Image (cartoon, rainbow, N blue to C red):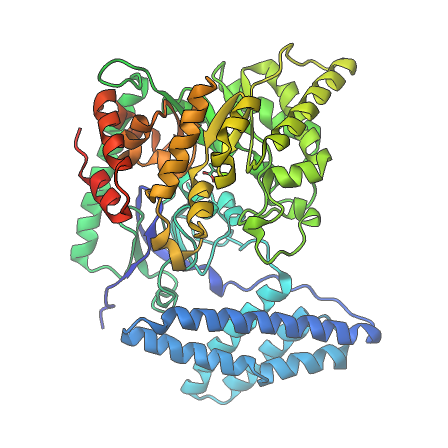
Length: 583
Ligand code: PEP
Ligand code: MG
């Protein structure tokens, strides 16, 4: 029987399409550690196991609620499956068996669970019953979920994905995504994740076709090696496409390649408005491997160098020398174009094992110890970064940017530390530039936008971080697929905060750039220019499209458009006005 085509809608987060065999990462068997434990350690080990089971139960319940409003028969089937898995978790032979084995054999929870899984599978197979044989998969699926929970797996292993495959998973963290080699993996599709979350940001930086926030049923309707299409533009995952769909997408893919080739020629052209005014177009950098592509895109420097990658996928902190090596390599490669180095922004949805010891569990990590707050609480983190970047500044122009600033005091303390590091390095006879690099402030918290005047007085430049500014203004988690449709950069409150910050920057005569994802969508370019933005920093893959847009616009028209938008108060009307804009 031919396989039927299924189309799942999600959030398209990158401008690309991939057609390839699926590889379901969730089915992966995690590496199981095996160790003996002392008899007195048994109760604690059993407790650890039970708390992992509780977490998996919550996870399955959550998946079930996501299915509730889906009327499709497939959703019913998946609900049945999840119910079976939930039943298995509540005191089944698997769970009871593992608890008993920890005590009987004095072994760790992962090993005990793995052994019980094998024993059950052997018993089921011995019954030679087709129906019971299918239960082996369920035992395994539940067992692997518990194993992953026990292991607190920091990242999924993507090493076994066949070259050219598309990864389908429940969730891929920003750190996992950063490990993806886009030459090996054609695309990703996940159930969790929103358009402005860091996973989306990293996927875009890798130019990796990606759809997030998909219906959970997508995992249950797809098997390894099924052909799937990831449409990152329209936000679709198509499983088992018909010949006709496949042909249509192959044609779109060819058109996309042609479009990209055509856009390449724009790299050498200036980013000027029709009236001749030059707009500064820089690139955001997530990962060092992007530098070549950034240079080829025609970017005038790096407007946001997210330093988080240096801290991810490792268990110890990077030393000053390591950070100096990584930073100076990028500064040198940029050959005289400026590099805006942003100090560490860990916390919220961006986690890194190496700084884990400083971040306690928090009910609301997005409102917790994040970014500059962590850097000022643990000054050695900031000091090491400042020292590394000051040393790298010998090789080319550098600017320093502080993330998640709330008050002018934070900037003042950071500036004092920067001065101290500069003096200290000079005393040590290390090479540093004579003048300090400009120190800028990210405007990404409503409080910062509302006190932009006082921040402008202590900052050398502003960078609007709209990803967080939207999140904190409209109280919508930027990475949560359940509320993704409410994440609206065009909310009038967001626009007013932006306008207010831009005006404050103008009054203080400091440059104001935008480095959030809003700047990377050509639909918003006229509005941003009209509001007074003259500097953009966007992912290199979006840069040619933004430049193309800039080159078709006049400042007068952009300003008129912005005035029109700012006179509206209804978000739906603003969206319509923005979508209807014609240069
Ligand atoms: C932002 O918040 O818009 C931003 C650029 O910072 P990040 O996405 O790294 O939080
Ligand atoms: Mg931010």
